[in-house]
Length: 320
Image (cartoon, rainbow, N blue to C red):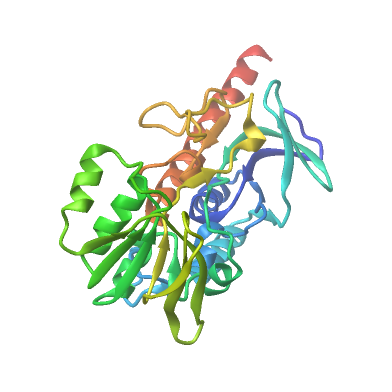
């Protein structure tokens, strides 16, 4: 193992609840981790307002505040955190190499916590109202739309799941679909089409969202995908459910991935196909995608990295 200034026992790529938790555990294990936060420090929770389902905060906590607190905790135990974006990695030889715009470092182990990005509509109004009536996570924010009329955008399984979940809180859920049919599986279609609280608007796309950060959303503008006609539709919330994209482009050809792009790990572990490289959080979890599960796998990654490094040290002593 190298002892050069640019060498580290553990490098964490990405932040958010998975990365920060990994950093806390790795730092407390005296591994002096280096973290590169990436293009969105704190991850998806930084565009969420109230988080009411993270244990320990009975009154809830703002998403950005939760991430700031986790970050401060990681730094308190000795994590070096850099606001940089990793441009390249080389896991083909040891020590591993990680490159940013400013530097190249080596590492004995790497924890990947680059997360996933919700696919959005790309509207300026969507961006401005995210967390203020616009959301990409029903399980995160559905509670705040109790007895309100909301819209779900999408036609796949994710959209049907989001719509069905929102019926627990919303007065009415209207699903906006670009085509005249759903892409969702038959069972999910039947479930949604037969639900008394779920309606559908076919052959339509959302081209604008109306509202303010102070008062939330009050309407959307719909465009008919066949005729081009537009109309305004009143709603108090918009949930985009057109999928997520795992942030894994950096690891193509180096780490195993599923067809949907999420990193493969051995079942029940956070082990990738490369010894010493661990994946945690939404970059490997396309099922739960919750802050608490991300934090849990971050803990696993740090503990497994510690065990891996101990095993490597033992091998070095035996062969020395």
